Image (tube, rainbow, N blue to C red; front, side):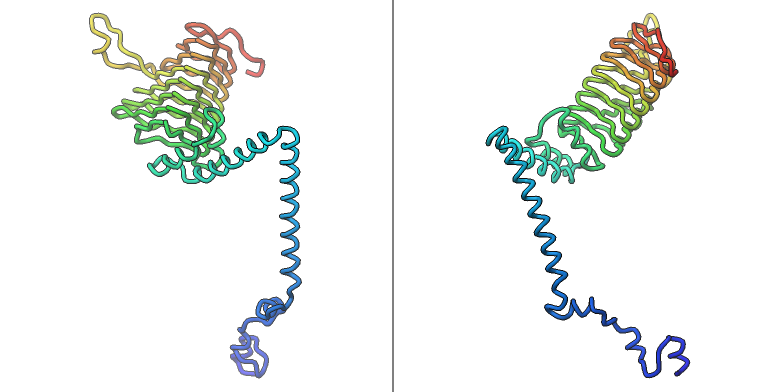
Length: 301
């Protein structure tokens, strides 16, 4: 045995080519020889056939049950829902904020139910759902995963406006305005809900909303105000602010709540419908009235 053969682990009279050649296993022979070991493909084919048979049996049983309970109308309704679901899933795969993505979204919603029923669109893919009727006139909109943007939502950026950032699984249900200008910005944490008709206007100071915050219809947030110095028209007075609006996690704001600048609403606080919040609300408090005042706190707080 030579030194090279000993180093390579070769037996005498065994060449290097033989040592590194493809192993002649039965698995390889079965692939090379037609008909060899044909039992494995046959078994696999039988399993696939049986699997498809079970699926067809379940499908037949399902539709037979619908036929017996609701007749042909029920069967057609179910078939239509399946086709719509396939259509939506296909086009939502290509949805996005660019031109092609907006076209794909418009095709996806064709024939789909409106309003809240489209919320599940956002769960299909991480890029979420932005309604075709939404208007984005803003250069710094940042959306997390599975965000839902409903019909006629407006993102507007005035001069020197900051970013609008929505966290994962945020839902904006329609006719909402996000507006930033003069250094103002808007941030909404994961899982929060903004219902129809809300206005979030951030100038001079930011609006910071935490996670799992519920904002009912027609709530208004203004992080600024107009100057009211005497002897000068309001339209000619500069904007002013008392500071940012901060709403902590798990707070709940009822219908028509107005939140002014410099206000902090504590964690888990509840603001009654129609309240005007001009001062800080403690954690876990329940506040009502105009101006809003805290009249009870939960035991947990």
